[in-house]
Length: 153
Image (cartoon, rainbow, N blue to C red; front, side, top):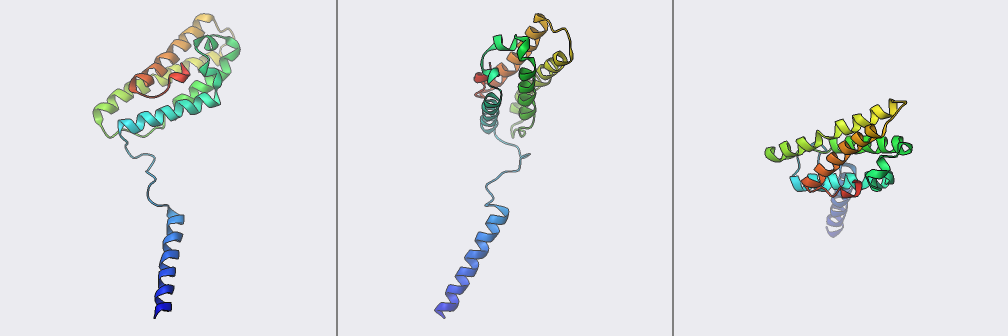
């Protein structure tokens, strides 16, 4: 009887372990599931740090963005930042979502400004300054929301 009980416990434990290895423990959330403002801000900060690691030039201040030799790198970094912020999940609070949407909406104009400069054969200092200003406004907005993105400005 004891052997049968032991065998049953081993089978149940092995089944549970196998099942959790296959489908996970259920602690992972759906990528599109709404999150709290605190979680969103934390994730936005993580995005900023990841972009800073991939594009360290963006951490060197606005002067580095005004150097036309850095155009392609800055453009790629701003595109990456915009895409990853856009991919963050929605918020659970409608009022907070409106606030976040207003800031997230600053990303595409910054991205587009850099993309248009990449296609331009004659990039002026004013053009670089305008794109840099849009980028600073975007990053500044993320910081105002509470995201730890100051490293990019």
